[in-house]
Image (cartoon, rainbow, N blue to C red; front, side, top):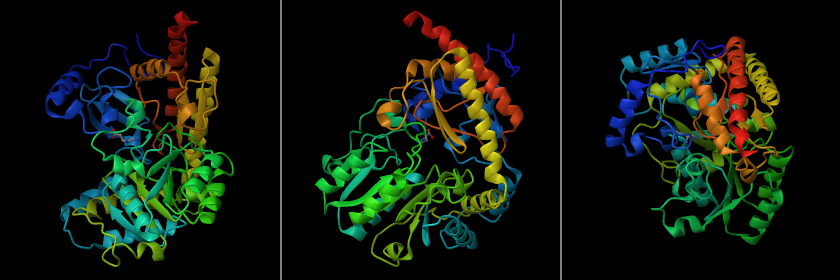
Length: 446
Ligand code: HOZ
């Protein structure tokens, strides 16, 4: 017996992955180096991955999967793109790090600034978390205020002050906040619902004179994918300007993903500060924050706001990023990705409809989420109306058929340029069976 369209047997051999997880649990907290990948929310044992090629990954037992995780977003070109591998290999052959300036970091800074409409200067760091914590520090220094407004369900890495009503791993594992963070640190953080301008306006008015910045993912990606309502980002821009508060777009996920210039290009709204990560490192650890020359002039050594890093601007990451951006600049790149992603969206919708499982599918470009709810998902509250049991059944049914999705309802599915129509159709065929399984599993409750 094989699963339709995949040739994969439902009785996968998972011996090595299972054994490795047992060993990993003795050596690493929860057996992993980042919480969501432990499969805690969906049950079962995580797969240990041995290699990736284009849109495929292979686990250590030799099972092959169509990958829609894309390492949580960086792999817009798919795995092991020859140009990226060549750039990294060449860079590595010259040494892996110097702790001194290199030409590649200047070139990548130039490419990023040319792409992202609101950026005149950028500082390279090592992760999205570092980028957002540095941007927050800068916003506080520039305004001389301490308050932060974030979105309920918004996630900006594991920055102390931003782990309030956070999405991603916190909502996945139902962790309301984190011990170890001083109450004083989060006292200055206010969370308001995404896509709700009135709530933001009320919060800014009530805390007038005390708020340094509003930080948001312009397309929410860590409560699952939730697009901004038409006009929302424009109104947030007007409101923050009126209230004299800095606006930070966390484009770690959306940067170079929803358009070459990120969500700010796609929606035509310019924030004061932008954080980046994922794609600009071509699959190597990276982050960045940037904005106007005036604001960035406050960053050390030009200014007094301290920020530093031994591996910042790492030559391997810079060269991988440059090779990636060069390919993304090709004229039809984003149109091609849009066509593929739209085909997947249409197929998934039809598959759900055929099975009679109500879903709400939200998509912006090549990032999307399927929520198991009959409500329209517009914010954290509606995202959480998704039936997580149904998600679990769907996730495992897809996995057994050789389709690898993020092991959480509150993350995104990423289409890469390495996927083709054939693989999209294969995914849709798998989804038809997976939705049927969801329906069958739902019967007893009705
Ligand atoms: N927090 C990231 C997803 N939104 C990464 C999770 C991981 O790598 O496990």
